[in-house]
Image 1 (cartoon, one colour):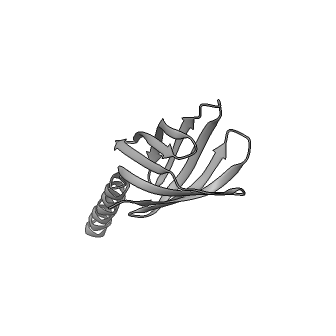
Image 2: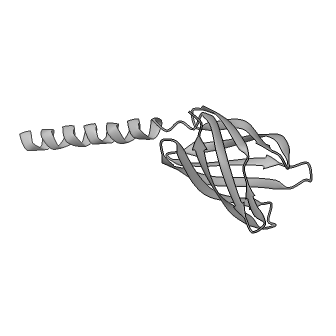
Image 3: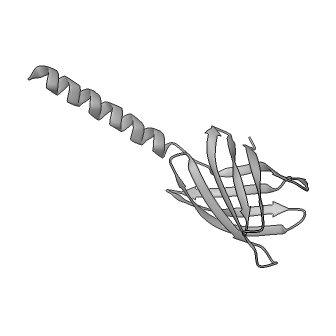
Length: 122
């Protein structure tokens, strides 16, 4: 019976480590993004506030000005959407690949897409 108790204890500790790791993801901060399109690369500044699994923030670029957004994060994956003045909704889907680096794709409201990377300002 003792080996079973030891095995359960190890599994409990391992499960707790996974939960702690998932909770440790925090996208809060200011990010320098590079959005790579077929027409060139945009360099917006993205400011994120994370509360639990909810994201809120601003996307600021020379082309579109500053636009607010909302989104979600689960484990290391996140998504957020912003509505442009032109009526399109841009949807960013990405993942945290390192503590201060994200990468992913953006859908331009069904009118094409792009890839992006981001580095958190320190």
